[in-house]
Length: 210
Image (tube, rainbow, N blue to C red):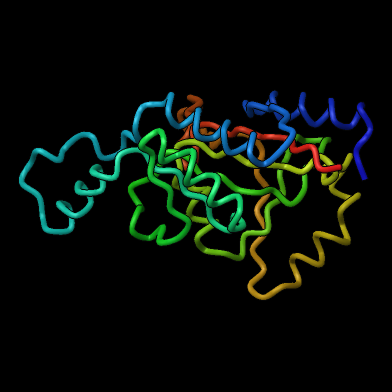
């Protein structure tokens, strides 16, 4: 069921108020193109760009060796057709694509491309079934998270998807993530910092799925 224009606009405004960047796409191919363009325009993941010239342990050298991958997009749980399209478009821009093995990339990747299960308009929140460790790591370690949200999965309130969420949480294991905006913290200094506990940016692509 497609949300009303009012609910859709509320979701957009609430998500943007939490620093998310919201766009609409007509197809997964367009979502893939958006993601690849975004990766091509950003600087490579900065987490390993300093210190590698120093004398390091073997483990440290292995981590620094990850720089040789260049820019990386991780896309866990993407279906075969969309994964193939992502690899095709990314390869043309000299960008690597991985879909698993995130424990080998704990120093971070450039972009995580995921699918969201639901959107909650009252808070601009994404609900993502995250029982896959690959998905959890991807959404925590990437500098930028691009989440594709089918328009028909946007609801006015969390109560409107109570039954669906209960069904997701009854699975084993039953990890369910609620994501509102980019990672942020102020801690005890009360100075706002983005990207400390997760991605610096959250891009939400609302997918037309009639």
